[in-house]
Length: 171
Image (cartoon, rainbow, N blue to C red; front, side, top):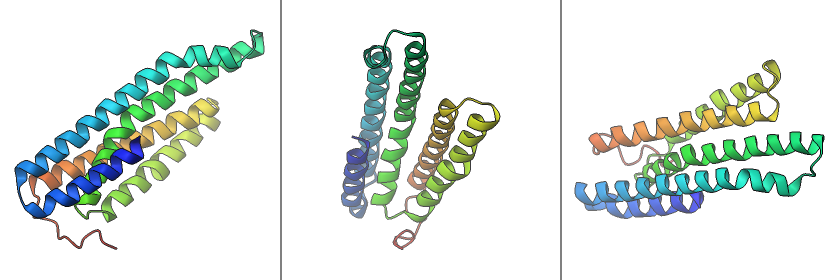
């Protein structure tokens, strides 16, 4: 669903941008970000609601099974949080791509996931001994950083739509 949303946002913005009509562009942005937030929220709620029943269904009712089920619930909730924060960022990324703004968003993605998320995940996992939950927490924080950067870029581009050359991100 998030990948489809990114692609749809990109196509809609690519079609709206050449019209030069700021009202149409604002509507495209509002609808894409609303759908992104709604789908992220739905995924979050579904994953959180299903976490415990799924974990209990997969693991035996033993002490080891209870520990594994607890970890599975934690990971499913972290996945839900990641979906909640990722979807608006993916929608914004699609909108920026539709505006032919690709270089800086690519750098934001690299920075968020590889400069923040991966090192933080390793640190939480290895230094604080949080294990796989630490890795997923780091990735979730990296996703949040990426989303914030994408939304800030979109907001800045929306305030000054003509300030960026059309060829900026075409490489």
